Length: 88
Image (cartoon, rainbow, N blue to C red):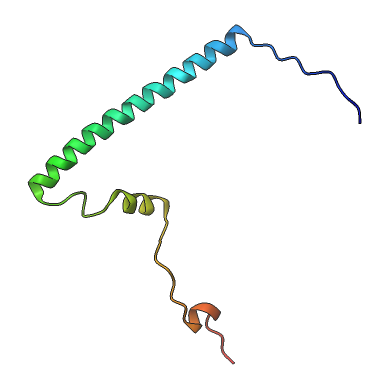
């Protein structure tokens, strides 16, 4: 097996500046999400107290499942569902 020389990596000033700008963007987005979550929790709790219900009676987990298209309901194990509509 041939051994090659280690690859030299150089860190340039542009690279560090780009990293810092991306890092600041991510932090600002995270702060905005936290602010929205805090405001959203306050308004939903106020709404649930005023109207007697949350967001249409759906939990956060159910809303996520709807958004991604996940249906956690198991299919029944009957013969037509297992084998389809086979005709002999």
